[in-house]
Every structure is written in structure tokens, then in C-alpha cells.
Length: 66
Image 1: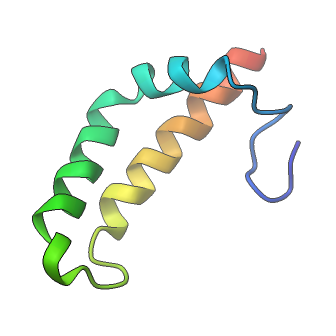
Image 2: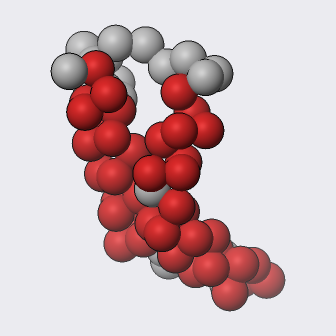
């Protein structure tokens, strides 16, 4: 398991599109948040959305390695 990401195994370019499809709702919510504040984006402005997206990606990656 990678200490930096908490995701077991290695990321491959083939796994990223599948993970994004599995987490499309969280990715869209994060994208909407970032684009809504694009002119004055502040650090932490979309932290809740980012954490939900990150958790989804992490869990999806873990499920795929089992």
C-alpha cells in the first residue's frame, strides 16, 4: 500500500478512467464547486467536495484490487 495515497498497489493509466466513471457524481460535484468560484478560488473552498471525491477514488481502487 502506498503511504502517500493510501491506495493499495499501483496506479495505472488503464485504471484511472474506470475510477473516474465509478466516482463521476463526486467528480462532477467537485468540478461544479471549483468552476463556480473560478474567479476567486480560495484554499479550502471546495474541501468537502474534494474529500468526497478522494474517498470515492480510494474506495474504488481498493475494491478493484481485491
